[in-house]
Image (cartoon, rainbow, N blue to C red; front, side, top):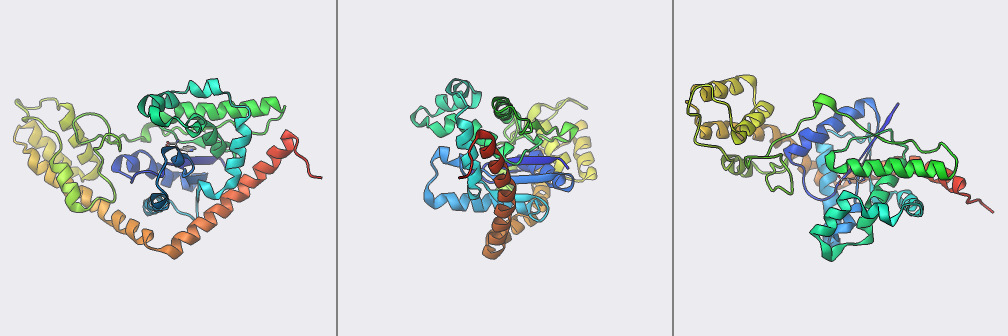
Length: 329
Ligand code: TRP
């Protein structure tokens, strides 16, 4: 059975874009693959979170993923910092990662541009830690978005390099997981582009109904169609896209018809869309809160996850130490 692995940022709550773009696919993957999902709380230190927030961020993300259907009994879900073997492999990989190649990665260059006051070594070696995450379980496939493609390419490079230096065929070269046509890109409500945290246009699973209503009602539209069967400008098409995702077919048909015969009132569409989103998010939000407040359950999940992840990671690390030449006395 192939191994799929994905790291999850521990900053920020899940929005509908995350859900339809990734999390829902993870839920499907756990049926067919040996899955590792972990919270990348070591990576998160590059942004210097406050000690009083670090734990809570992890707890939130964990609760949200489980509430969405990641099943700790099927997939191995763990916290990166619970698996010290990852940090050790990171150290070992760093010895053959070159400053020049790390400086040339787009994500690093972008960070340097955006936050010149905090260009720490952790940012520079971010792709090395990510490589350690991936190859420590010999993952075959990694679901990555566009922004992480280069990091995955680096993981392949470091895995290949290790194999080459030590004349072994030890590490699997991880491939991007291809969702194919299943990939859904949820648009934002601000007219153009996709839903994203940094765009500030997210509808979050944890949002209260009144928050969702407020956000949807504020969505960008236009003056309305001026002739029958007019093409939809992007902001309007985005609203319809969300409607198709969240509402039933008859609702979609109703508003399509209203648009095509120019009787549409965007206010009505938005009201309906908001209620349908709330219908979807409410049970998820309730489950998130339930899990978030269940210390006993969470502690069990985290302990089991760490145990399963360490079993796999420590085997790799033992092999790697031996390949490098470390021997017992
Ligand atoms: N860098 C990823 C992100 O920002 C998170 C991540 C860390 C990751 N380690 C990983 C993703 C390993 C896939 C595999 O989203």
